[in-house]
Image (cartoon, rainbow, N blue to C red; front, side, top):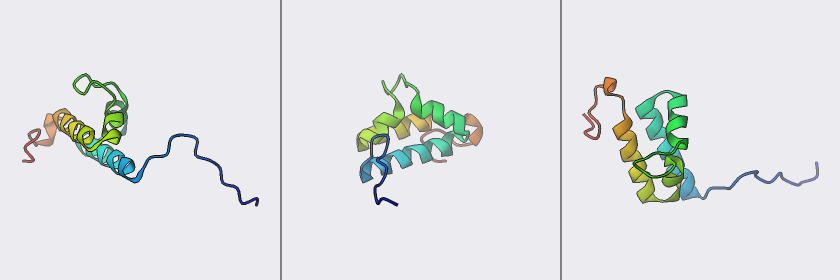
Length: 87
């Protein structure tokens, strides 16, 4: 073993960025349930957010709050919860 480590192939997130990414993924999974729906929502362009939700969530706390609000609005009506009310 040479002692050399393989460099990450993509950008490395800071601790705060990673935490925001995790929160966005968890919120989307809780609201949408289906893994494919979560991927599509987070990685696709969202008209109301004017960008990719995952990029906005990772970039700042304000972006994460906007994404979480958009996720709440996407929550299927069949969950029995009114969007944004928590009841």
